[in-house]
Length: 603
Ligand code: GDP
Image (cartoon, rainbow, N blue to C red; front, top):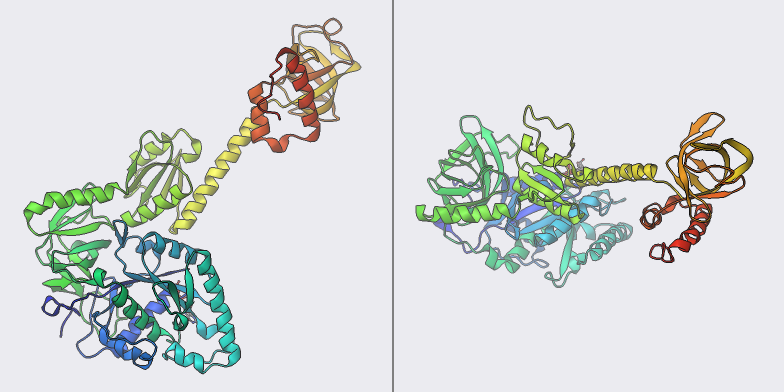
């Protein structure tokens, strides 16, 4: 009764490909994985059940059995020992399967609800897979919900589709064609798998139902067949020291801090020296236990009890217990040092990998990013940079006093933000004065950040606009001189533009008259007066009405070249037609003194 599908005594040429499942929420990722695991449990042979941590193996024999009816379409002679499915679907965990410049995942299934088609996370999943250069199949799920579908439980799709009516067949084709178009938009050629001639050029779409099990045989056969055929080099088992990636850091009763690891290369042994990333620099420790769940007949029973193995061969999902893992970081690379002389070098490798993701730019006015793992940190940094938003600091771990301090140091108010992904402020850390944005879905986190930045920009814009004088032209109403000097108080009509307190007025010769102190209408003071309004204004001025200025005179607001430029560039929406006329008139007046006035901003 072996605990691992492959132990070092029977190393085959190739290891199991590591398979991930991605896709939009509710499209059936979890159901599909359950169905696949269920298939594996039911169809396994005695003693073949393998237990993994964070992953499930579908052994070769099961794939061969379920694919038996397909041998005409998908001839399968399996050399890989099976498929290793990562248990947790979705891109948050996928990002922790990171490996420099790529992914630990060998192949992926993008699940899409065929009745709904592509959704936001479908596009995102494919983009992530493309970034990490992971090939994928598309599972067009929920075919049992195509109107009129007659279910044929657990049958191959090719069998089930031949038993459907012509209408149902063409309904499904229409839905699949929509997926083909969406994939084409992303630059992928795609076809229903049974119409694909060249799998290196086409994405295969496999219609399935996670509910009835239809299409699961083809999905498994294609995953196995394609990875074995096109990834031979990647899957060759190397008998060297293990390489892996930390998926999760967990505290277990009686074991202390442990790490759940996917070993993707080599052999991991008890007492091996491990090097991995920690919150405060690389951790070096020795493997105390390599743990997998106790073998169970039914995979659905909660995995609680562990048994210890002496060694495992890639690919495998195991829990490692070892001293000093309190500060281990999820998403960290993990290396085994063959002997002590290699430790320093591996520490450097780990440090370098971590430093390509973490950011600290003390001269940058930008946002702070804190995340629970290296993988998610990398994904968020990439998304934020993609939106051209500057980053001051990006790190793994809870929000500390220093993070708040750094956030406050950003010159730009819009960037005094801490983006938190599955982390919280340490107790006693006061985040007032900075904007804390947390969300457990990366794209929503970024959306919220963008909304916030926009809010701040709008606020800034309003503030600037409020503090600016605007072009205007007024006429001093004959018979409405209330005070001749210091301050002058007269009644005016606004001919065009907007009159505001603080506006400096000039006459038609360009001579400065004074600054508007107050605008009043029926004893109420106004912040602005627009075209057609008749108001009383007080003007701080050394001049005198009757001597320097006269009833019936036109006055204009004064502005500089730069002020006009700002208005026309940033606040075009407040420049009404009457204001534009006033601007042109005022510019003519100003050009008497300065012939080049506003040449650069008006054309
Ligand atoms: P996830 O969020 O992508 O993991 O989606 P789930 O696996 O949780 O599925 C979401 C819902 O769709 C659940 O109510 C499932 O029962 C249902 N569902 C999943 N696959 C199928 C399918 O093939 N057919 C039908 N009819 N329902 C499905």
